[in-house]
Image 1 (tube, rainbow, N blue to C red):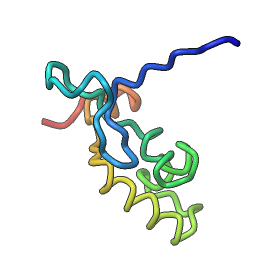
Image 2 (cartoon, rainbow, N blue to C red; image 1 turned 180 degrees about the horizontal axis):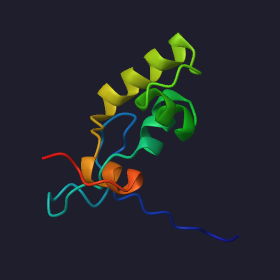
Image 3 (cartoon, rainbow, N blue to C red; image 1 turned 180 degrees about the vertical axis):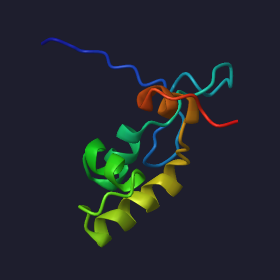
Amino acid sequence: MNTVNVRNSGTNVRDGSAGPDEHDGAGAAPPTTIKDVARVAGVSHTTVSRVLNDVDAVRPATRVRVLEAIDATGWTRDETAAALARRRAPSP
């Protein structure tokens, strides 16, 4: 029988429990991404992006689920990364 070891070192965004490496507080958890938000909301990361960019092609109920997932995960927009994606300097 083959055994595969899987290591989870991040915080579980679904229930907030710490991974095995976080009990000592030595390292910070990786930042929450829109893919984490999408997983919690049960949608694609494209749908999360559409909600964030206020695209009308998202059903109201889905928009609410995504916004609730953003609140639940504590996700915040990284303005520097967003500016790089838009190829503009971030506002001060």
